[in-house]
Length: 112
View 1: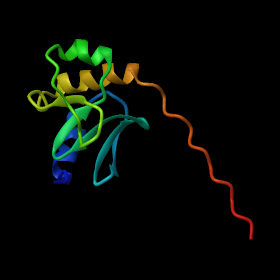
View 2 (view 1 turned 120 degrees about the vertical axis):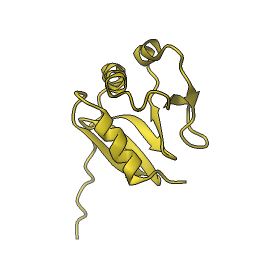
View 3 (view 1 turned 120 degrees about the horizontal axis):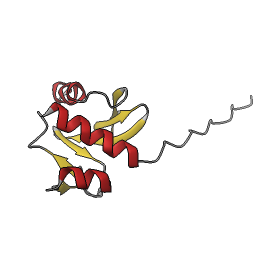
View 4 (view 1 turned 60 degrees about the horizontal axis):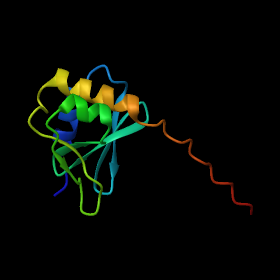
């Protein structure tokens, strides 16, 4: 089951002061980014945050699950998804530990 646009918009609206939050349709679901850095996925109307030590410490009682079959487990955020301050802080502490995105290589132009 694909995530609804309404749920994706709700999650984006919940996150404050964590950079420019954007989403991108990926594999039929959504990646969620801050200033171009991916920090989570939205799959089946559920929010999954990339696991970090800071995130684990912040959450305390972590629930992990794979966002899709064959994926590595991520932090599943369900109970506190409506707590805007808590969710925003989780995103901020997570982003601090994630590496910067690698610059994309440009494909050379084809010669005619």
